[in-house]
Amino acid sequence: MRSTAIARVIGRRVWDSRARPTVEADVVLAGGAQGRAIAPAGASTGSGEAVDLRDGGPEFGGLDVSRAVAGVNDEIAEGLHGLDATDQGAVDAALRDLDGTPDKSRLGGNALIAVSMASAKAAAAAREQPLWACLAGSSGKDLRLPLPEIQLFGGGAHAGHRIDLQDIMVTAIGARDYVEALDWTAEVYAAAGALLDARGQLFGLADEGGYWPAFDSNEAALGAAVESIERAGLTPGQDMALSLDIAASQFGTHGRYRLAADGRSLDSDGLGELLEDWLRRYPIVSIEDPFAEDDPEGFRRFTAAVGQRVQIVGDDFLVTDARRIREAAAKSAANAVLIKPNQAGTLSEAREALDAARESGFAAIVSARSGESEDVTVTHLAVGWQVPQLKVGSFARGERTAKWNEGIRIAEALGGRGELHAIEDLGAVPIR
Ligand SMILES: O=C(O)[C@@H](CO)OP(=O)(O)O
Ligand SMILES: [Mg+2]
Image 1: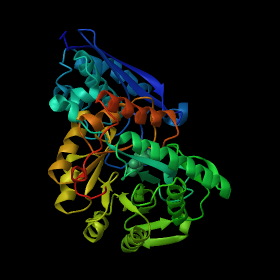
Image 2 (image 1 turned 90 degrees about the vertical axis):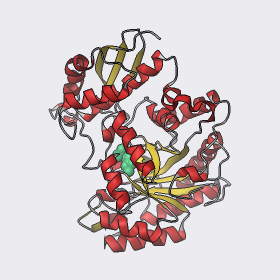
Image 3 (image 1 turned 60 degrees about the vertical axis):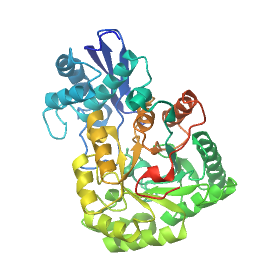
Image 4 (image 1 turned 180 degrees about the vertical axis):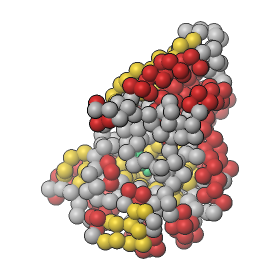
């Protein structure tokens, strides 16, 4: 193998799927191999996430990333020069040290994650392997593909808060393989569009490409999702189930929750009762952030009540942080975690969070962000790290389909249609 020492790091400003500036990084090794990655960005962010560096000036609503890009080209390029890209731990430790803040706000989580991922890709390129194979090491041909979670309807911060729930997703729990899971999803997505059109409720597309419906209540969205599954000729709860991201931090704090679409306010217990009622009436297998990030007690009570039969996922609550995951596990507050690399700020820390989840018996889902690009690293992480579930927003925009389609190519390289993980590998929860 030619030299894997980092020779150059190049940062540039590119654009994300919300027409906002973001950071792209190239890492070039002395032997000639190169890797490139683009930082994603959230809209409903947890307060414990790595912080993106944004310029705050008059351009692009204060969201310009010129300073973050300059940091990549100067400090980071200089600091990483000569480090071995195949030692991801050392590269990420150097990035953390260069930044020097606990929340990565000085050089920016956006700069760090772009460089961290680009370095991993350069190391894979030097080995003449795709990233998923490089990350998986010797696991070779037995690798499985993740079960897709796909957004049908968008709400909350991604759709002008038309409804309070952020992601109403479907997941093909009965599919035989990854390719079939996508086939079914396409049918359900099309059926949902036809249904909303027929009802005159079609309003546009939300940030992640799910329909932005003119529903007059949160439950109307759940009902329409079930109907879409049926219209596609599939059996709700058997072939295709619902998965929700409540993103409750967006409409609640200090144990008070305001469901604007339903015109009601609830305390933490009341919200728990509402969700339990939905669990009885709709085929829901997974609920993300059912309570706000400042309501661990809500998570704990809900997990005690229904954690045996539904996946309870911490996103804003756990922010891809190993320490928070261990704390939540010790209190039995949630039983699953979303793994978003840019919440952690480096790939190594995202991996540590995944390891903490596995040690705690938590299930895990690799996830993209609402602001995305053509970068398909998350698909490689889900396969390379053998995480059984992947959440990438909808099925209807290029930055999303790029990631789903990459899974088809990986399945093909593995010699088939993408075998899904077994039920027991999904972790705490019997979701298939
Ligand atoms: O909350 C989430 O899980 C993500 C993806 O839907 O949204 P955002 O990237 O805005 O945090
Ligand atoms: Mg979320």
